[in-house]
Length: 492
Ligand code: NAD
Image (cartoon, rainbow, N blue to C red; front, side):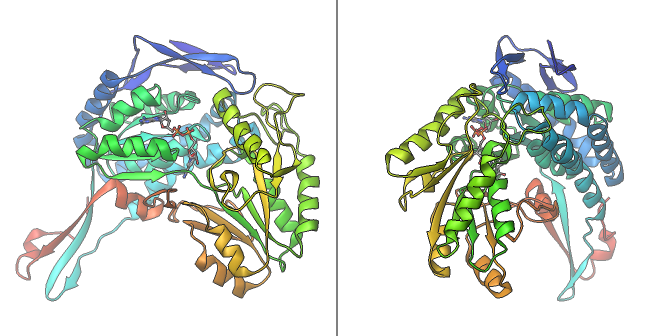
């Protein structure tokens, strides 16, 4: 079962134990660019999830026992494989999820490769010297946990999958990935790349399918030891419930409703640029700062300039280098986004830009939209829209800005723009967010902790925080006389 997408051949079956496996049923993968079907994908269920977990379980002991250097070398070859096929991956991903080809080429694919390279390098540096404690000696070791289930969303499928798979494999685990049904194709290409890189059979597996079937089956499988999920809050609730009886540790990266706080002492050009950047990926970005809070003394000029700049954004086919804003992922998502906007308008908000579908382009193209005058606590200010929809509110004092910024149940990120370093310190300390950006946006380092507060998630990954999650961290204490016989001060 194969599809040819943008000239690239993609095997659309599962990848289990180093073999392509078909299912009795399939589902249709539709491109958001023109709502045309582009592939038939194997639709997995309990049997495929079980088979994949079994394959991962069987491959685990040998992979976990491999000396670190060898494990790291295989993962570096996977990174090289992603680099070598970056153009194919970028084209297929763009057709599949509708995000800009230029972003895939410049940012997403290099980062996907780095998700392997960085954690391979870190694995080799991870060192646990013996420590003296009251005459005894202790050593902390990072034992691989076992089989890791990874469930991912469609807005950056390969990047978000590799962000979990890279550290999970580096730590010595084996993995079963359930990619998003709205954009499943690059996961299949990743399976080819891992095989070519020499990753042993069963170490990485892909079960294609819908969330309700393949995803639910994988979450409830008694053979998994960790579950890393990126997606929405309602799905997280279902997954947590399914995994709870097995007491499986969870790492959740969920939605957001982040604020961009613009103070009167800021560089206004920068603030305007950061505001307009929020339309990237048609607003389908978890970290997006869609709630703009601006000091009332500069609000009029700021709003005018943001609207003027956003009006000039080019909407269209994401394969065109000139396009800035593409289509939304699917018809149901399009209706959902429009529902939020129409209800906000009915409740008194006013669109100073956009406010509805792009009728000239038709399809799933939604106009970049800016709403003002929404009431405090209203749906548009508290729920994640996940579309090209910004709101602008004003504040009078720093306290008011902080209160408004923190007034959701999410806590993924926050951005503030100010020319006052003391204010930057003060306000960043008070914002409820896993990541705070001061006078910048979306700057991320793989060594930094990443995750959200409140309903934006559970846990942190990045750097050693990833190993904390993907490993069973063990402390061994040696009695004064016993330690020398127990040997070495490092892991293999
Ligand atoms: P979603 O929750 O609908 O789906 C995510 C994944 O879960 C998909 O693979 C889906 O098939 C699967 N799934 C659905 N139902 C399931 C079930 N019952 N059991 C197991 N798996 C199931 O989310 P989405 O619409 O694909 O993605 C958008 C969401 O992801 C937004 O809320 C966004 O903020 C969030 N997101 C968060 C981050 C982050 O790092 N915090 C990054 C990207 C996206």
